[in-house]
Length: 288
Image 1 (spheres, rainbow, N blue to C red):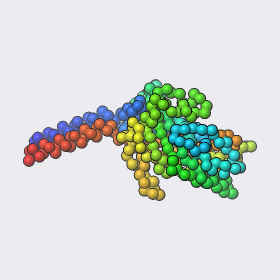
Image 2: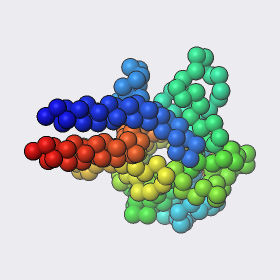
Image 3: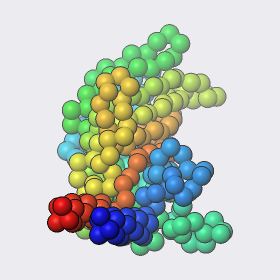
Image 4: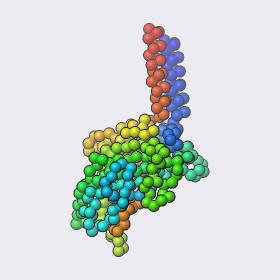
């Protein structure tokens, strides 16, 4: 019994030490605290809160990571968008209150820079419009086919997002491919309204989605199934919300988005816990 208590205590100490030591994850240059909820009282309900800016447009349906000509928005004939794919590319500006600028804020956050050697970019596409309905009040209802929808996050050491207009191909660093996360779009909704803005008409929209991780270097951290669709009960890993406005006659819009998810400590720490439990079981058998 004495030996068992010793092993239990040692295993607990080892796991606690490693869990604390590995709270700061570093994957392809992207750094965050996997235990942000425990260490930051102001943190929201998730330990990954990413804020982004993005460019969004409609284009002909295409293969994953393929960006094409943008369709001009005609607010009087929104039915022209049927068959077009809603597509966007963006860049993360903040994760858990940490930005990518050294010495800002002051005092520094921990980590002080969420991507000191890279920028974290993303692209979403393949959501094809199959119907558009406009009510008398100007509410716009879009129907979408998401069978081929996709979303990916990229760790980009070139730091060139936004250097070219439109921001499309420069959002993808071919030397990394889908290094950080590959995602599947499980569900999403787009609510929109036609609004008058002086002599212009604006299509204002709010987008929300639930996504599941399917690959990428950070897969093991994000595969948590903590985002539940209240309508279907299906469990996803990440939620995404955004808002943007299309002005009549333009072919793109810009907006901001937020990405939420729960992440687990470094997988190596969990493996150490498993080894510790196996060791305790073996010791207990020997004592018996």
